[in-house]
Image (cartoon, rainbow, N blue to C red):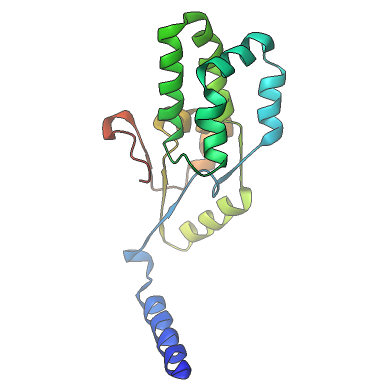
Amino acid sequence: IIDKIRKREKEDANEIQNELHCDNTIIAFDLHGVLSRPDMKKMAKVIRTHPEKRKLLKALRATGFMKELVVARLAGLDATVPEKKMKDLTYLCKRKDEKRYTILNPLVAQLCDAQSPDNATFDIARQLKNAGFNIYLFSNVGTDYFELLRLLWGYDLFDFFDGFYTTNPGDGYVKKP
């Protein structure tokens, strides 16, 4: 029985390989955790160099930022779209306290963009593109944060992609595009 299973698995793999042609295959890459990695040093620097650290810490504590996003995400209890979650938190903060909002809003974007490109993965994607495959980026990062990353990393890093889809308010911030 095991030999039959192995033989069938090998036949399935060969069949898939024979069907995988450049002209009928699209390869999609995710942004966070695939094409980029969180840069803890950048995140720490964003917080460390913030001009009003005391107010920042107070704002973070008062808005539930740590509980609502960071702790829940690390514990695997939060699968929401980062941009939407951040905008919701900063909007809630804006309604309660304009001063807190002006402190948090720019910080939120900086923390979300504290990523570094994973050059090895970009190289693989570029090689696939050079081999004739269609290469796309799909991400739940959100359109605004993606645009900031492209600006920070340089638009030329993304030149070889055939297209992008990032979740946005118009589609209700789809969690997994």
